[in-house]
Image 1 (cartoon, rainbow, N blue to C red):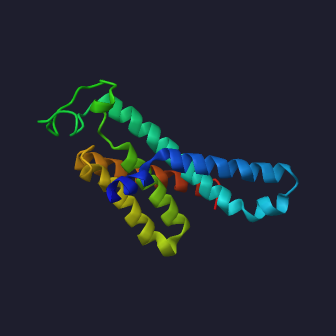
Image 2 (image 1 turned 45 degrees about the vertical axis):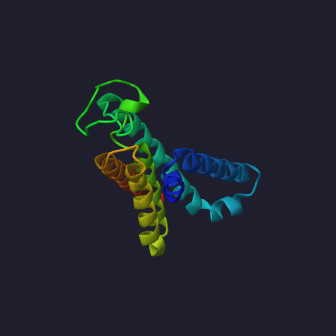
Length: 169
């Protein structure tokens, strides 16, 4: 039960839904003549853009990769091997590498660690537990989770660098 709860941190519906809803609220506040509020929350806007952008970009990349690569999930076949592939199978049972949940967990954790550096160890720990929970639940191989962690972190750090180059703090 604890692992199933932990894995929810990697469910992109939460981060994308909440992030987009808050971005919409900030946009409405600005249009309603609440520029002072919008200006005070400018930093929050950048955080939300980083979160939504990193989850979306890394998630689309993971989804494309896992469907093209076609690695079997450990729960698909009773005697499944980590080396079984069906390239371009486009079926969930053959879409394990990289783990989408691990990718999202890393993107969220790294974003939150960047934005709250004092709590970075906590956010990174939560992301790691969420990502690894997929292997412990038997729906991914450990290497799927590790690849997802790397993908989510790399995309987030690259997007953060790009945003900083464009003047987003």
